[in-house]
Image 1 (spheres, protein in one colour):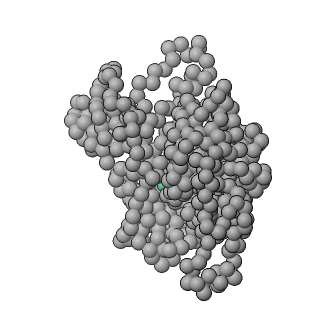
Image 2 (cartoon, rainbow over the protein chains, first blue to last red):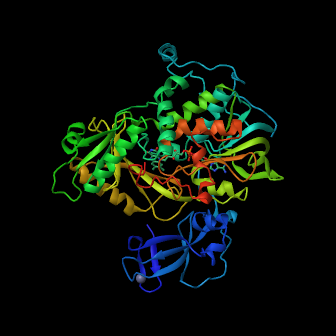
Image 3 (cartoon, chains in turn blue, cyan):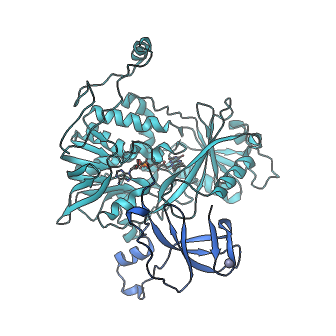
Length: 104
Length: 431
Ligand SMILES: Cc1cc2nc3c(=O)[nH]c(=O)nc-3n(C[C@H](O)[C@H](O)[C@H](O)COP(=O)(O)OP(=O)(O)OC[C@H]3O[C@@H](n4cnc5c(N)ncnc54)[C@H](O)[C@@H]3O)c2cc1C
Ligand SMILES: [Zn+2]
């Protein structure tokens, strides 16, 4: 169970939120000029890292606003939360050995 | 690591004990302490014709059919832990082939037809039990969809029946069919040839039969890199050293993205936690598998007497093999909605696996952009049922370098061409 701090409402239980998946994926500016491979990459391909991932979440049962958070997909620890439109600098390396392991 | 250490008294292709009533009796005299190991614990050699990454059911089945059908035995299965402890050993073991689309029906029905002779073929009891899988319909839309699916399946030659509400009750008497509940039962579809199997036995049975044919099953051997030369795979870096390989197959389920990234391949896959739980053991109370899309739960009873109960995935991605508690809570609510009789049952244990989910809920089985590197992944929440079929088509793909007609539609390239096989919802429920 995650405790997520909405940037507007404060800490709330995970069940109030909707997870919108990997953040910072930009739709190609000119779709007509984008080839199938590049468009498929945008639509379907995911980084799916084992380590830190930046995600979009929506406080759907609360203020209904979207925001970004950074979370470890190994420990579920939330390492930062920031508003839409912000792009904070990189965190500790998501794939460093210290962040890995823990699975049989 | 060049050494090839075999277990005492058993080397190469020398034949193992065949399991039979007689061998059981014989071993009873030595208090069952003299059974030979079921498969040979191999250390990896320098080089193989085919290296399979991942010792789950799918990887082991692939190795078995490579040896059996294609005569390719210079094969290693590299598993980072002990075999069968990934999703293969964590799933709720529902086996069925009632998928809507022609492509899926062909694939899952191939698997089901292999299941039907599997214990004999492997000389290993997989405890495959065709007890019938019931998929419930809870409203008018569900009923229409269910009937459409029954017809589509019959056109594909797959057994399927529509049951009215009363027929559902007759088939599974403990279901609550009162009309005044939140999700009343309106009817359902039944696949009598569907059922369940023993998950561990599937991994062990394939391992034993593959090992007997000369395949090296290398446990605690983690693949850490994929070496390529000129767009072609040449070997893998592992925790036990470098291993040369003619061809490589990635069969790592939840870790598919991690392993594919070693060859700079991006996948349309996200890894999600999927949880299940079992109850305390009780006397036989439910002799079929029941699944419901609307309340989202599926349940069967193991031979030990435990109820085996599964639900949906957590919304976020994870590699932690555990999910959130509210998912379990919802799952128990759904169970009691259908089966009020279970209200005082206690749950024994609960766990999670990491499932590799694709956008169209169909697997990816075939080539990658790297020559001689193949992938079999994206089975998500429902690949146990496909284990023998998946291994069979993937063995064909590895042996010939080309997909079999059955897995050709499941190419990675479909995400570029747009020819998706959308089984979300179409395939009864998730599993
Ligand atoms: C809770 C739950 C319930 C389910 N219920 C059902 C069901 O009822 N019916 C159904 O059909 N399906 C079900 N599934 C899905 C099913 O379990 C899977 O689709 C299927 O078992 C996948 O088999 P596999 O062999 O591909 O994967 P796995 O058994 O996960 O095997 C992959 C193996 O790869 C290994 N590996 C990973 N990385 C590396 C590496 N770098 N080097 C070496 N080895 C590596 C892992 O250790 C693992 O053993 C369920 C899954 C879960 C989690
Ligand atoms: Zn809020």
